[in-house]
Image (cartoon, rainbow over all chains, first blue to last red; front, side, top):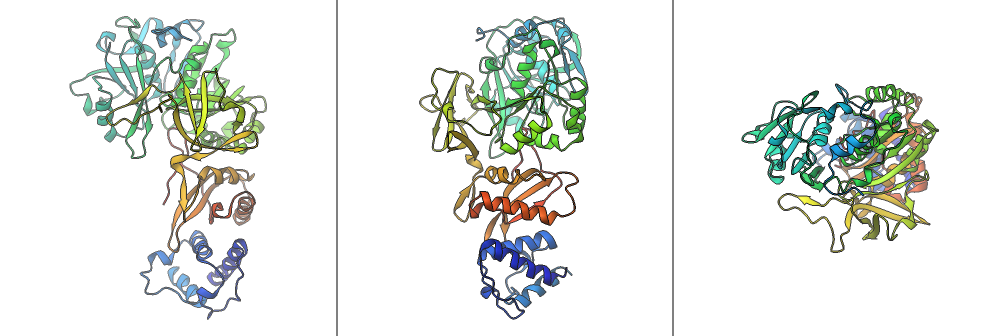
Length: 81
Length: 460
C-alpha cells in the first residue's frame, strides 16, 4: 500500500470510529476542512507513527507544517525517505 | 492467635515431621529438619542478638534462612529485596538504624563499622542459641513514588493469619510463588508453606518462567501464588501445562474476569482464590467464587479480623494484620484517627459487588478526563487473542497526550494483526466511554513485569 493510500484509509477509518463526517479528500483540500477534529487528527498521526515508524510533526519546527492533504502526504513521503 | 514471643523458628520446628521438608531453591536446597542442628549463618548468633539487621542477600533462600534463624534474636530484620538499587541502601541503613548485616556475597560499603555475617544454604554448626528474646520487627520495603523505598514494620503477629495449623496431609503439600518472599505476597505464601509442614519451591533471581515452572512441576507443586501479570506471563509459556496445582492464588494487582477464566480453563482441578492484600494493609480478604471483585457484603462487617470501609472511593482497612507503622525520617502516618489504613485502591459498586478500578496514584488524566489504566486493560484482556495488556498515555505532537494500549498476543495468533487490533477497538468502544478508548493499539512481544509482580507502568 502506498503511503498515500494508507493515509486516505486512515482518515476514513478514524472518521468512522470518531463519528465524524469526512469531506471528499483531494490534494487541495485543507486539513482544517476535512471534518476531523484535533483528537481524530492526533489519532491519525499516532497510528501513522505505529505503521510507518515516523512522526514528522514531532520533528518539524512548525515552519513546514502541511496545510493541505497533498502537503500531508508529501510530509510523510519525505519523512520516510 | 499465637502467643507473643513465639519465634518463627519455633513455628517451623513444631510444624510436623522433622525431616522430609525442604526449601528447594534455584541453586541450592535445604532440608528444613537440618536447621535444628545446623545454621546458615557464618557468625555467632550473639553477634546479631538485639541488633537491627539488614538482610541483603541476592538469593531469597539465604534471606529465608536468615529470617527463620534470627526472628526472636535480632531486634529488627530488614528484608532487602535483591533488586533494591545500591544508591538506596544508605537511606535504608539510616532509616532502620542498621548496625549489622547478613549478606551472601561481598558486603556493601555501608557495612563499614557494622557487624557482617554471611548466610549460605550450605549449613554449618550453629553457634549459639536460637532463644526467642523479643518480638522482632520485620521491615518490608515497598517502592515509593520518587524511587526511594518506603519501609513498613511488620512482625510475626501481623502475619499470624498466614501461620497455618499443621495437618496430616501437610507433608505432601508443596508451596510456591512467582514472587519473592521479601515482598508481602511472597511472604504470606512462604509462611503458610513452612508452618504447614510441607516443602517450598523458591524462585531464583531472574529465573526464566519456564525453568521455574519446570522445577515446580518436578516437585509436584500443590499451592502456587502469583500476581495476575505473572500468571498471564506464565500461561504464555508451554511449561504452564507441566504443573497441576490444587490451589491457584492471585494477589497484588487488580484481578480481572479474563485471567480468572483463563486459569480455570488451564487448571480445571484447582481451587482458584484471589486475595486482596498490600504491604501497608496486610491481607484483607480472599475471594473464592471465581468472580472478579468482591461481594458488597464484605464492607462494614463487624467482628471479623478485618474491618473494611470505603472513603473517597478507596478501600480502607483496620485489622491486626496491617503494618504497625512506616519507618524512617519524615515517615508518613499509616493509619487514620480510627486506625484504618488507606489501601489506595479505588473501588466501584456495580449491583451487589465491588470491583477494583485501579490505584488512586495511577489515575491517568487526558484532557481533563480521568480514568484508570486497569479499566481499559480489563476490557482489552477479554479478547481471546490477548495474553496481556498495558494502557498508558503517549505524548501526541498534536493534542498533548493520547491513551494507547500495548498488547501481547497469544502465540500463533495468526497473520492479521490489523484484524485483531480492529476487534480490540470494537470491544473497547462497546464497553468504555469514548475518552477511554485507546487511540492506538500496538502489538508488542512482551510487557515488563517488575520484581513485585506488578505490570510496570510508564506514561509519557
